[in-house]
Image (cartoon, rainbow, N blue to C red; front, side, top):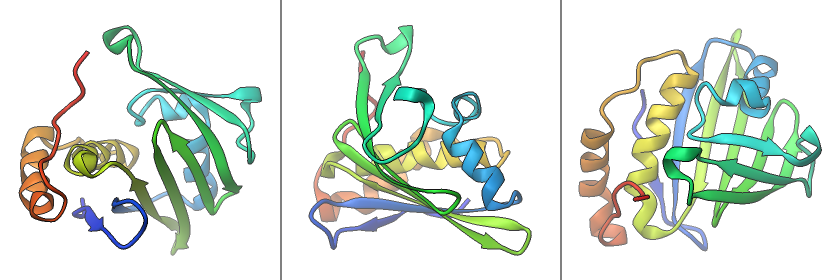
Length: 164
């Protein structure tokens, strides 16, 4: 696992995470775009209208019965298989960059978000990307606490997990 980095040089703050994955970009692309594969690591069910990740496609993010009041929508802004995928996730914007590295992939995830969501999302994405890499996710609360201590002086108080 690598530490998430806070970026505060754009219109909105962002967290940037990286992972080295054993699979080549074409395989990782399927893991980040195919609904069944997304279910193994993404925090919710993802349904793209028409089933095709193309610019302008709408996306529904369903968090299930446990968080029934939390369904988000999004839109695809860029889809350059197997290199770049950019889409909105509610009010946030997610950017996945895939670069070949040896026989594997260097993955970069950038999440542009509300200032108070940085520590929560960095901790959450750490766990998600660990699952994508085939690793057991670490403790969310300890990751959140560490990120909150780092991000609060720059962004202000950090919100914990969403409540239902």
